[in-house]
Image (tube, rainbow, N blue to C red; front, side, top):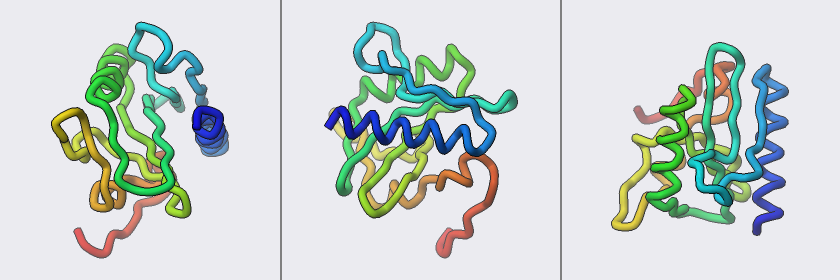
Length: 134
């Protein structure tokens, strides 16, 4: 699973570079005592800290610790925190932390939460998605 996760993190890094954002994958994420996200991206005007989750289907569960670490890093660095979720055959969505559903042990991303997230082009400011039901 880890090698697959790295592959999708690298995919995201390439996507950011193709849209004018500098981006790096933080290989130490989860293995050092500092609260670091999986990806840091910025374009000089906007800075993003991203925790990446890849699954074959929904729901996706995220630990309270992962979210707290993302918040700590984002506040210190001055970045906007996002959870990037890639579901097989459904693509990427980028979720602000207020969108997550809290559980006893952390957070849950189900269909409603996933589809409320931003698509990549919305995140980087290239388009505004029209939603049928708002």
